[in-house]
Length: 65
Image (tube, rainbow, N blue to C red; front, side, top):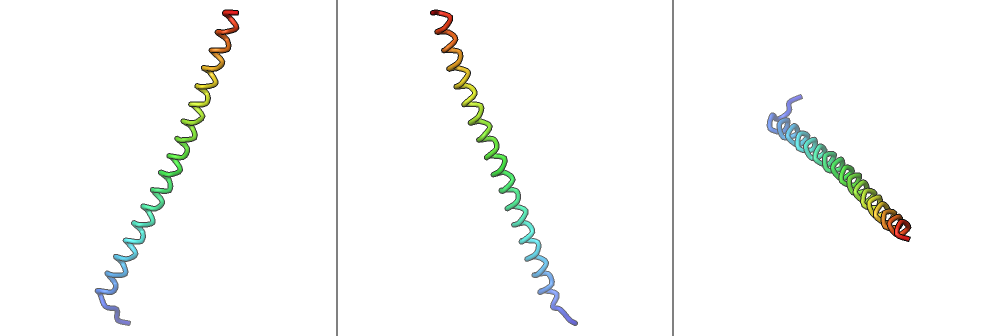
C-alpha cells in the first residue's frame, strides 16, 4: 500500500504535538498539586503560630497574676 510521504509526516507531527500537549497538562497538574500542598502547609503554620501566641499571652497573664 502506498502512503503519501506528506501524510506520514503530518501524522507524525500531529502525534508529536499531542504528546507535547499531554506532557504540558501533566506538568500543570503536578504543579497545581504542589501549590495546593504548599498552601495547606502555610495555613497550618499560620494556625500553629496563632495558637502559640495565644498560649504565650495566656501564660504571661497567669505569671503576672
